[in-house]
Image (tube, rainbow, N blue to C red):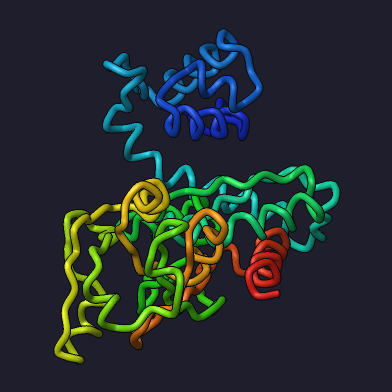
Length: 301
């Protein structure tokens, strides 16, 4: 691997970045708009330049070598820095821009904000795309530093180090149940609430105690959690066919109105705040500034 720089160009580095993300030549070629033979030729150039196979055959496509894995994060950071360099001082025109905005959040937050954000994006930036991803707090700082994620919507406090943050909205809770459920016919009192079988969403999986149980304990009351699931997206289907009730974030409950009955929770349950977070590298990027402003206006009209 001598005289590496003269044999390297930006297109090769972009191709390597996508190859390491996909670990599959055909899928990577599709993302890059190249033919498979053209990308295979680029991979041969990269292997020669780095003096390493980079990707070797694996059970499900290609497996990165140790050298390739070591290159992955610095390469993403380099490409993100180059993007920032060429976009510095340039205005962002949403009507003509062709850009993918990558947003990470929990499924409940995605369900609450994606519809208004997508509607605003379709109107203001019709050629831009949204990639909504599930947030992983363990890898989030690295993903944001490398440009893999542009914006994260979080409830965790404090925010991970090196991230800027701004509160979007405060969230409370509402109770949902199937349409026609006897408890939906009138205002639900605490005795009725405690007597019913509950569904609980435990994002860590398998838990049967949540914020509602802490609030009930303060009143010397309890409830029976019959089913625990690990995703809010499972709630409507399971609720519709049973007499279970679930206490869920208010925006999510309103999103399901018409599909499920929505009633007030008959006790005070501490709410939470949802904030958007971004990395310092994207703080002044015109496209990212526009995205954050559009997000704020979409969810806090």
